Length: 250
Image (cartoon, rainbow, N blue to C red; front, top):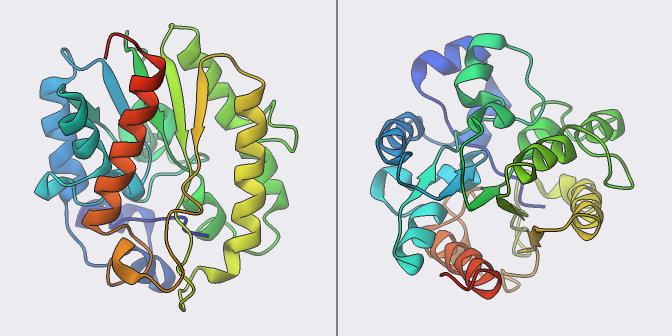
């Protein structure tokens, strides 16, 4: 299962107290998420598409090569990328949560057309370490997909009229990865997401679990966790295809 994490700026890392496993899963420390966030705020008034989530969405943002950047390129319009590395669905710290470490706080009620969301990986890995995660997953989304923090966020967005795409995670390409043990857990998580989507009008799920050919390392970075620029581009294009398929104005 390719749940992804991302390094926060140095000051945020101190607040979170991320230690060995957090460092391993976040890769090299770069403050790109905050730089992209500042850039996104300058465009938020004109952007009709928002991107929320964790490092899967934020990765490569500093080089304008993130998933959101690929969406923007294909659609020919700005995408306000608010994703932050290390962000979680369930997050208890009020200050860092308010600035986006809690994914629901990345959405501020704007009148958008589309909102693309990913998230949940950090809750399952850094939150419970792939052990005894049933309770944590149920808090995010119930087995029937009808209750929990994720459906609550999606309903809040849908009430504004915006359509929602929930983006799944990449899987390991048949080679060793530190998160391979989470594969079954991740499959169950996305099964619940799919159930949620089937029960909601105007909500879509982009499943990328079969995107990576077996043994193909080119879809992942050197850490075998985060997406490569190639993967970010492909996923961004697929998201744009979903939007254009549904939205005749694009």
